[in-house]
Length: 60
Image: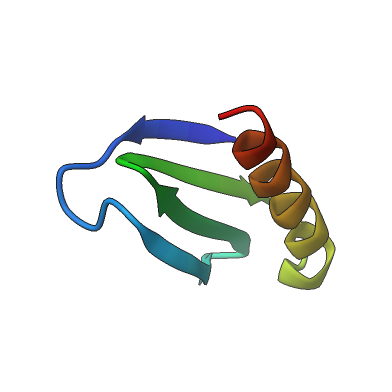
């Protein structure tokens, strides 16, 4: 899980990415960008990314 400030796309929908066997999901909310990545199939990571996004939004 990575987080960083975003100057562009301050609020971007969750998007799936796969490169060289590493899958992940990225999104941004209110100027912070997030990525959850791992050497697992995207189908296994998607529920984790959804849970992380919910927890981040609930604690904002």
